[in-house]
Length: 240
Image (tube, rainbow, N blue to C red; front, side, top):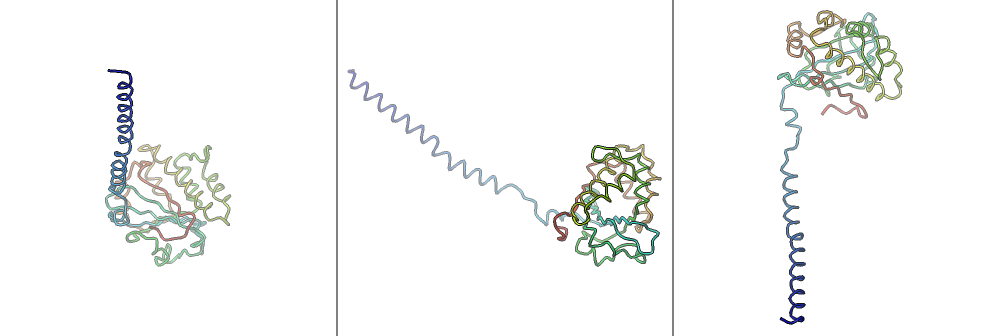
């Protein structure tokens, strides 16, 4: 074989190799793209119907300035969505400025019509606390940790009072932080907590004692994963 034939054969091999290399990238790409797209659209996505597949009851948690006042002011209003299978509780904070003067001493709570857009299931009852109750609750669990500091009840109230009232989000975010700090400390103490003392702190319950006992039996001792705290910040839209 002369040198001219060798060069020609080498050239053909290089051309064939280059074509194979290009095809090895070009052909699989549409196949990969189709597989990627099919995977993307085949993944199950949460839908409103799926989210609402559980049956819920709603409980309101109302913070007042002074429960003994003839016209108490609402400092905070949170709704607890409790699924009947006793999975995760969702605790949703509503913008307090909208409900500040709406507490009814006769009804011992909010007029249900005002809460209707935010309810998930029937409104079963309320837990009502005032600022003195917050002090007592914090003392009963030995204080809480917030913003890297250990605080007593007075410290928590000062933290809440320092919120910018012209910014409803700031008020709600601080309330959410306080709730999370209280829940975290209760979870840390676990079975060692004085449960009877804790349940005696709120000034008023409007739910039946048997229902309260059932909730306690299901969620005690408390786990930090049992409650998700969710302030409705940035919008006053209805709860999804």
